[in-house]
Image 1: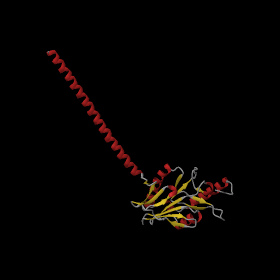
Image 2: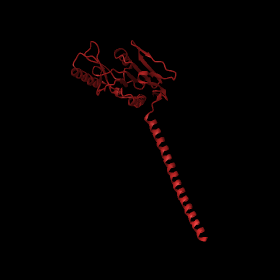
Image 3: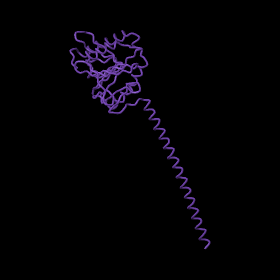
Image 4: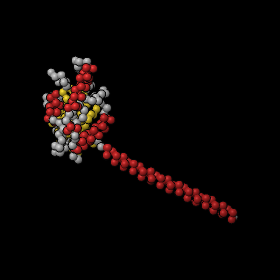
Length: 250
């Protein structure tokens, strides 16, 4: 991304702005409703699986995004609940994601709004994503109302994406689909529902139990085979003994 100032100077400026932002946050910013926390957990766990198969996908959780604003010395600032960046290059963003210093811009931002705790000015965030950052995709989910909208930036403004034949919202660049499933936003990657750790653990437990049953069956069959071999050997010995007895009688 082009810049006019030296990188070191930009780093100092943006680091100071990030520290000022953190100090300015009200206590309620650090409080989260259960529904918001649950959806965040589902999103991170699901997208972790996408990152394994797509190394160019980077997922962030409540990371401050800072970006230049025309005519202003201080950068613009916004904190998505979750954010996805697509980049083949590594991304180093410890305290904040500073656009002039990064190889790529945010590709997808996600916000979860609860009536019990709004935490942020979501209308203001919407304008920042659309008018200033021009983020290609923006997901807005109201867990309390079961309302889910996926916006796509058309070049001028956000437009809601209609569902496909399966009733899912599609992000083709990520090979991803999403929809409400059992009251939460769930994700399908390359057509398959991404499992959660609980699902994976149940599958693992079932596989272990099946393996134990098979091992027990194999062990039972092995004992039965050994017992049959011993019985066969006993009968052979008995037959040999019988033949010897018959020969001596003649």
